[in-house]
Image 1 (cartoon, rainbow, N blue to C red):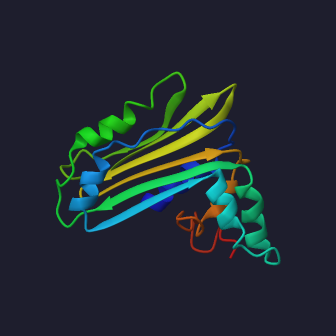
Image 2: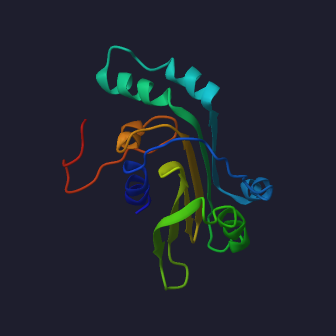
Image 3: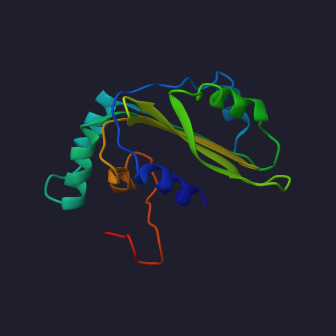
Length: 181
């Protein structure tokens, strides 16, 4: 479910100016409780350095290298826990309180009505009629993930970043469709 939501959000985004969100200070305490922690903070300079490790000869890596030139940052925080209820929903609210209209618009919302169900929201930031930021908040019973990507990209280009910089490979449709590998 997470990869499908991530793809839906990322595939249609056209990026312009950056707008950062602040990760709550309480994320540090969550990291102490979590069984697995992913903490990725790549600003434009770090993305440029990382892109230097990609090949100019391979078409897919060459495309990714070009895409990275327009990115301002990729920020991912993910916490996986052994039991349900090990993070307070107030942390989710703290992130989402920063994602308010008119700049931020929730474009996809997945909500489970059952106790302990998966919940996810995807927000786009609008600026001058364009999408200039994206934030994905995924709150599952045993996992909390926030993805924040800023920078300039054409629609559909983010799917090409899959498998690089901590972004999962993304495919869609029946097996084999949409896969360029």
